[in-house]
Every structure is written in structure tokens, then in C-alpha cells.
Length: 207
Image 1 (cartoon, rainbow, N blue to C red):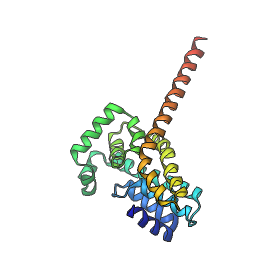
Image 2: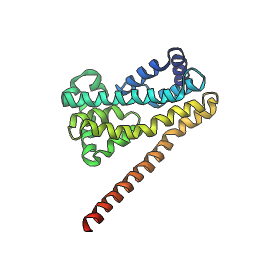
Image 3: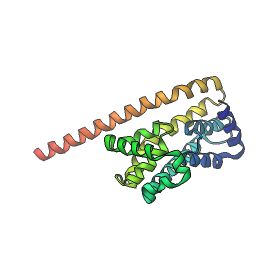
Image 4: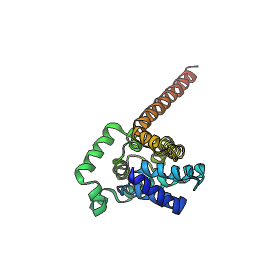
């Protein structure tokens, strides 16, 4: 919670720009928890230093740009990126091999669920780009769908809990489990919609 308080103090002084830069650093693999950063951004809106709806938009852009930058670095430099010292520390060859294996097993679903796996996002996004198994726009679509669940959740949680820190702390701890439930519900809905669309196409062809 000390980190949250420090981030709130910094963001209150420097506004949207500070939140945006912090989220870009989160995307680059800096050990700064993205969820706490988003909660702090929402909290300064709850304290009157920002507009919460604008904050939600700013944080969404910051998250997606940070993720896209990691994907594009992996896509452009491939496995050679593992030779960069910052990346090598974040993702040694053994971890990269494990990520490749996970892509083989889980496919594009891994990019969606990476949003709900703190500590794995950057490694997943770099590997996704380096694998050349998915286009940039497909990556952005899957990542964006997951971000539409997680980003507003954390920002508005911070907003409503800005003046209720014990309540906020409780939900920060519960939040990751709640996001898994939300992500699972959304995935099931998408699968059902996709199945129904295929059924309609089959029915239309038969008639």
C-alpha cells in the first residue's frame, strides 16, 4: 500500500502525463505493478485532481501503446532481442522457450489472458511479436478486448475508493480474482456468439 500512496502523491502533482508515462514503463517491463498504477490514476480523480472518464481514456491508450511497443520490438528483432541486456534479464532464453511452447498449446488465447497475469505480460507480448504467428492488428484486438475489462475496473475502483483506503486495499487484494471471473465470463460470451454465428452460416448454406 505504500507504493500506492507514493504513486497517488506523484500523480496528484503531475496529472495525466505522469500516469501515462508510468503505464508506458509498466509495458516495458519495469517492475511497477500496472494494476496499482491504474488504481492510483483513478484515486487522484476521486480526490479531485483529474476527471475519471478522461483518466480511463488516457490509461487505456497508455496501456495499449506500451503493449504494442513490446509486440513490435519482438516482431522486428525476433529472437535477437534476447541479446539485449534489459530484455535478457526480463526473459532469459529458457523463459522464452517456455513462452513459445505456451503459444503452441494455447494460441491466441494466451494474448487475451496475459492481461490478467501480472509479471507475464511483457514476456508474452514480446514472444507474440517474435513468433510471427499473429498479425499486429489481431494482437491489438485481443489485447484491447482484455484491456477493456481490466483498465476501467482498476481505474474506477481507485476512483470510488479514493477516500476509503481500507475498502480500497481490500478490493485491490480481491481485484485479480474478480478480473479472472470477468475475463472468463467475457470469453464464454464470445465463444457462444462465435458458435451462434457459425450455426447461422451453416443454416443459411443448407437453405
